[in-house]
Length: 68
Image 1 (cartoon, rainbow, N blue to C red):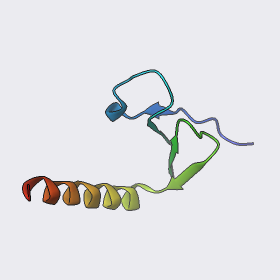
Image 2 (cartoon, rainbow, N blue to C red; image 1 turned 135 degrees about the horizontal axis):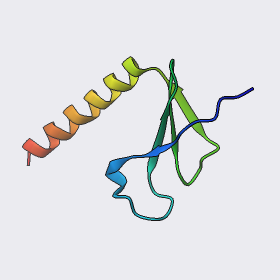
Image 3 (cartoon, rainbow, N blue to C red; image 1 turned 180 degrees about the horizontal axis):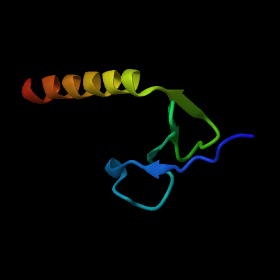
Image 4 (cartoon, rainbow, N blue to C red; image 1 turned 45 degrees about the horizontal axis):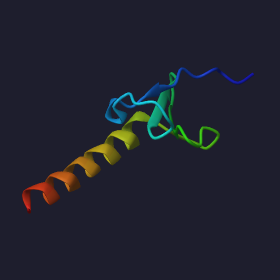
């Protein structure tokens, strides 16, 4: 039986109504991600690769921001 996931909206979405945000749910072994306008499409990863992706995105953002 599939485990029910407790989906949480990203704080970056601003809490606005509508389907324009990223949601995530954590289980003991994985982190699940989905876009609220297509909830049947989900990604599953573990914390380490997700942390690496977020660090890379933040670093690229900082490089673009300081280059202006």
